[in-house]
Length: 221
Image (cartoon, rainbow, N blue to C red; front, top):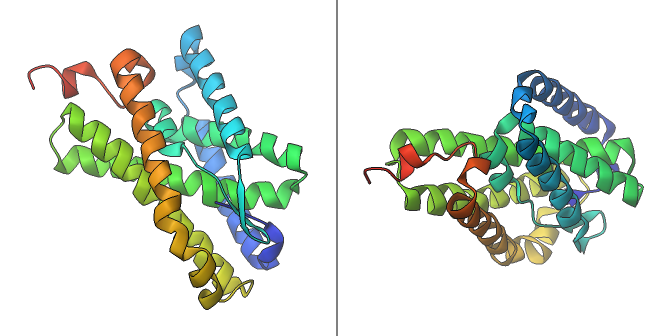
């Protein structure tokens, strides 16, 4: 989901901007830039960024200042890791904001709530699933891909909803009637998009997915 930053009070925009700045600096410092010595990996990263840019242009307006689009960030996180996913999402969102004249405040607010937050949640879920569930192909695809993407979409949707309620832009009753009722229909496509992207990649291009390896998830299973 994307939101018009003018719906938030200035202190909230400042707080979100500070958190995003810290996250972006951390991502730039931690990013495994050496991976891009392989031209194929660089091309895949740039192509994924362009795909996000196109995907995020396909939005549906739910309320004034609030729109919905598929995130696709769970798959991106599993492909590149947290730091490169944050960088790719930031570049893609910058392109969207330039094209839509959203401005710097609009970029920062959405880069945090529709970029850093879902990427971070996807990464945390990857760690937890590796700890507590067996390393099997179907666990990776169904849980890391389908289930995680759906849950991340729901959590981010509720996060935006409560930010709007707490800022006074909308009442909870209003959003409950017009937006929250649509969440199941909105985030099932999120789960299927990310899940099927991962299915195709781990079958045909597993070396494009940093979090997947044949040795861990296929051999001896």
